[in-house]
Image 1: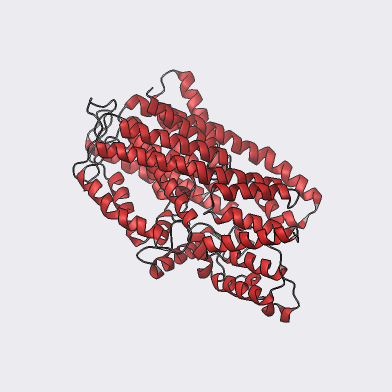
Image 2 (image 1 turned 45 degrees about the vertical axis):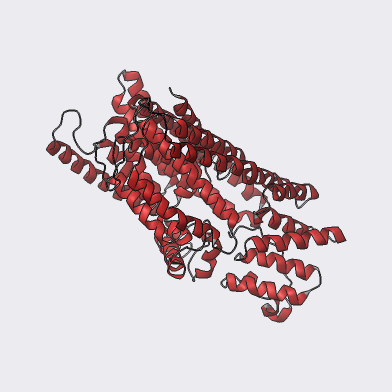
Length: 578
């Protein structure tokens, strides 16, 4: 196997077993591997995927992307986070595209994805049948009302595997299932066919346990795509292939409808306990908020990564609090600007209508990619690197033998190169992306590492040790408001009253609100600081600002509106709204 294949396999394993969105260690390793892969792609011989039109389009869109990042008031840390995620996605896509030109390498990469799917599915089964029931019983015995939200999730029994959400687990299984299906179809000895058959059963059972409609839709499309790729296959003529594709599509549609009904029925108690809490109603509210953001900020958006910051302004009765729009395309357009819909549409169209016919492992990878693209129309796994990076690898592999329509001059990447030296622009791009990711790892990732340690140290309550870690996090990435907010809230929670601590608390609260001036929780933190310092007028002003940013939340009403001033100022909350 080539060094690039080893890099991509390591990236695939790291991003799934240690999802970067919840594991600082996985985040660091994923960015380092992506940086090395960017260098490998930049200096590899051979022709480049994408030609003159695609490069000219990138140059036209680059100023808009820079404007969306630079011309917003605050939120630079969130913008850098999203830019790093998109850079890693692009590196993984082009790495998968180069690997996809070699059939055996695609098969091997697909086998790695399939094996990871088995491991993760086994973990999900253990969660559903053993870990969750035992933990729920222990919490129920403690009779602590504060743990009721956790009990609801545990007793629902929807596993998440190594990921943060059942939908993320379902999204990854939708990627691994078509690769397992391809391995089963091509296995020769009966023992291998039996092993791959068992692997499919395990993964399908774990998918059913998640009861994720989006994951089910993605998996159905992915497997149908892999079972009936377009064009000739094994000597069939086009008519027979089209007939088979039609039969597979009808069967897949009927299967999806039947299982969807079972999913909704099994979740009836969860849905019925809160009127309007069904997945469709909640998503409609999220989508409406994203469309209203696009209406109010059509050109440059609200700022990359800032959907959860602006979302509270659009919350209406019956809508949920969320970090995501449950539609990755709408969220990208709402945050970067409506112009972002153009490259997204071209990418989806190019992937959906290849010039060359896909066969074998490439067709299975394309099926996984198609499921991911459809899943993100009703969910947000693009913003979860644990799912997005494997999807990018398979999307690239699935498009390796195709030339996207409308991108003149595009050429498929050759497996081993043709001895042609890489272009100067490609070398520069590889170095630039690698440097960006390395600097990001040394700053933002290091800050996230220290902040995670600080949060772990607060399990027994606020402490000076946790605050020391937060200060290290702020020193590593001073433009990120999270460490400053954590520091200010920790000092408030433990009623730190020495002059030095009061000064540090004020500086940290002000710094966090300055870095993200549109966040209600950060202005609320400043209000708490002013109230603790004996300045009720300044506290009222900051609470009024928080109330304007999140009018539906009673916590942010100015103190004078809380029962004629008799209700005490509430304690600080974790800064989770962003």
